[in-house]
Image 1 (cartoon, rainbow, N blue to C red):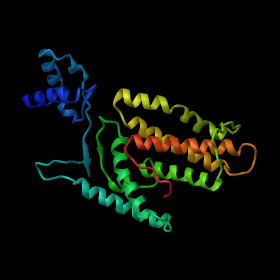
Image 2 (image 1 turned 135 degrees about the horizontal axis):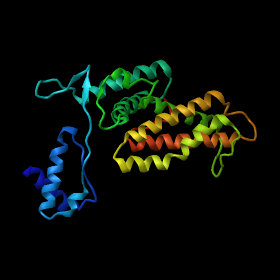
Image 3 (image 1 turned 180 degrees about the horizontal axis):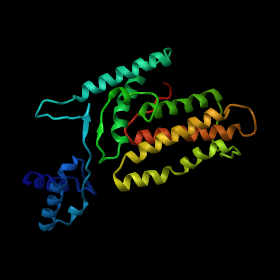
Image 4 (image 1 turned 90 degrees about the vertical axis):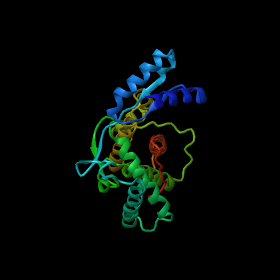
Length: 255
């Protein structure tokens, strides 16, 4: 406790923080309540700006990880294996991709980060790398692939969409449009609850809605709604990329 008190005082004096967030396991909740209470008794009202951001337990094969018992997973090894798995899938799906190694790294590392932030903080989850790096399902690579698909459509169209407004009479587009309109509220909710999974789940829902729209609508048909459809695709690409950026995940333009 004395070490944490000294650290809190140092951080306030050094950084004059607006908020100080302690991202530590849920089992330490009582400790941080005591830390804040002691600081309050010492007359430091800024203790109200200290927040414990707890998270649940990560297991592998249903077993708890423990440094004391030697049951650990080294992050470097996990990331290296994730990149290898991503590389294999890229070789199968798009062997002619120019920058395969760079994309594989973005996908592999991004998959691990996204999976960690996809789960609600307090929920426990079992870590399975094969599932994490899949290009299908509710994964980071699925969202990245959806962004890359949108970018591919825009490249094929080759149009300047500056100033184009989305004006569609297509029921297949409504769900995608609705989700795009929710983006600002999603960010506010994630910030207000210190819950990045709000953004992750939103990105998955938007990617699913967009892929469903793309499956039912011929986007590149030359008609009076072409530019509106392309503006919708561009909006999806922008929002998916920004969602991933907020989570610390890259969004390759090609995969």
